Image (cartoon, rainbow, N blue to C red; front, top):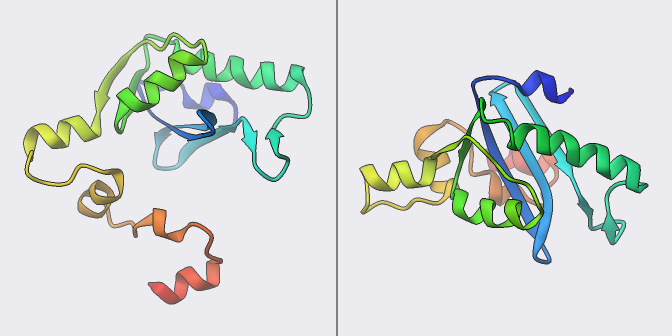
Length: 142
């Protein structure tokens, strides 16, 4: 998928961090269109990309999405993600929604973590507990 497939009126954004930097960033414009751009590969012990040119091209795709003001960005705990995104030199625009803050404004007495919100608002299983499991083990737990 190329970044032009993600150009919609809104796009969910999420990062994963490791060692104080962005390990990967994901974008999704719909339940069926998503893209993850990796930067760190623990198996390699360093950069995911084989050379500077490839990494630069990947970062330009990320920049094109984050800095496009016509795409509304939706985050979960966006203040956390944005501190890393800005530290990396991106200047995100159109960051208007945060599912954690919106849920917390409605239900301040309830939990607001992504795992909890996923269990309340979707029919998906708690995915964070699936880490490190094989597909056969996940099916046994269902």
